[in-house]
Length: 158
Ligand code: HEC
Image 1 (spheres, rainbow, N blue to C red):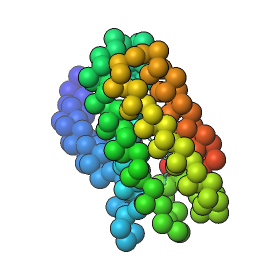
Image 2: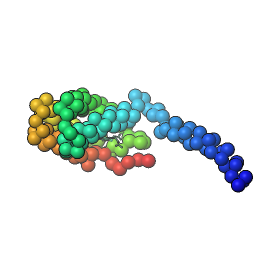
Image 3: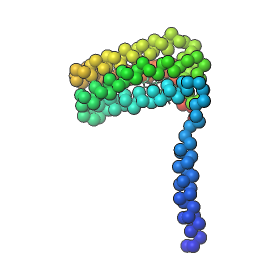
């Protein structure tokens, strides 16, 4: 059918246009120091490090001591980093931080300490290669992420 031809010609243009839209990405963070961008990038990197560890700890992939240990060491380095990027008033899109972060600073600090300590413990047992000790240490970290999120992270902002 000859009438299809214009559509076929338009297809590459349409693909090009949608790629450009993807390229635009989220709005640039114009706030001084870009705290929301920095903390979210660090926490996303945290998740990217932590997830593969869970796959091994939970037996869904073979446990490789060196790989697991390298991730545990990286997680420990990351564990202290996001928190300076929560200065007062840094609540703007796409942040999911609840007002409680700034209203209950002592509790927020306590949740950080609990997490940092749990990660240190996980890094320590990762050196032993003893999966029976690694599993509960992994779950303790996972629990510390979840309990902080429950108190201090709200629903996703679109
Ligand atoms: C002390 C509290 C606390 C701990 C511990 C914590 N988080 Fe979060 N996390 C937050 C808060 C608050 C935000 C929201 C930040 C924002 O959007 O401004 C967040 C955001 C994130 C994000 C960004 C993506 C999104 O849409 O919210 C990821 C991913 C994430 N956390 C993963 C983790 C993982 C994995 C752990 C544990 C290994 C962890 N977090 C530990 C408080 C915490």
